[in-house]
Length: 355
Image (cartoon, rainbow, N blue to C red; front, side, top):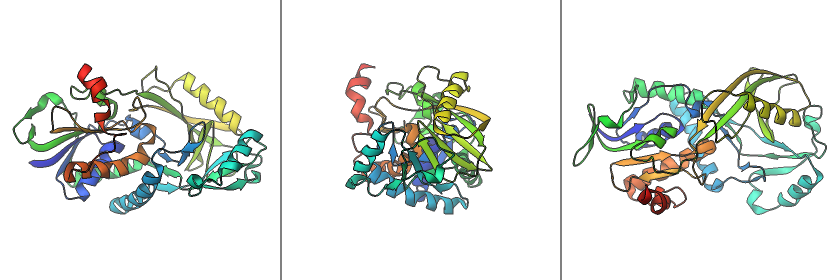
């Protein structure tokens, strides 16, 4: 079978990139072993234009958010299911200083599309700790990643676009115009395999900085909370009276096992945020394919034009993937340029030539 692209991995990156290719008429095959512990399935899938300890606008947000707000509803229609949920994020202020800072910042043009006016906090009185009010962020919400991945996997399988097995680089052979893998001849092989690329013979030199993330699933003793609450940690309503609470960032213990340390960190932050009791129902852990500069790794191998990568999306994969999948498609098919912030060329001189 002749292919335009052989996609390795069906997490967020592989799902959205392969869908982008297929929607543009390309012949694609996705190879994925179906393991359920990949970081994409652990992630909460939150998209939020205002993030971080210092509450700054998401990098490239003015490009990313309009694009994926169109992409995900169209993808829902394509798969005939609902996984894209728009929710506001309520940020309660914990000091008078933060209240003052944001009252001044709310009028800045860069925030006007994303931040509402001052909230007095009465809506969450008795639930959230803090006497200084807060603000609400618009254009936020979450994607039910597991549902999206499961439904897309079913579609791939039904349409014979999926090979459900482990991929081995050793089984590839390089011909003049294509790469042969088993019964498939592909013009290009694109790696979307998360932390798997750190062990790849092609991309092991890229400066990944994997980070373990943990979250809790809890029940709250209160009336349903219908927005995301964020300060120190986030509390995300996911239905059936359950909420996800996250997340931790650990560069040392890179495994998929929930830890006592992670639970204690999240409980401490949750107790500093909420007044109400809670019950821990579950705890999950994953390893994000983050990078040294918190920007994706996208591009073609410097010595092999048939090998590419779409990876390193980190904690913001849901926000980043649609826009940059489209950019990568245009780069490959129309010779458009990648922006240097995501192009792997930015690290070639320092890392590849000194591997």
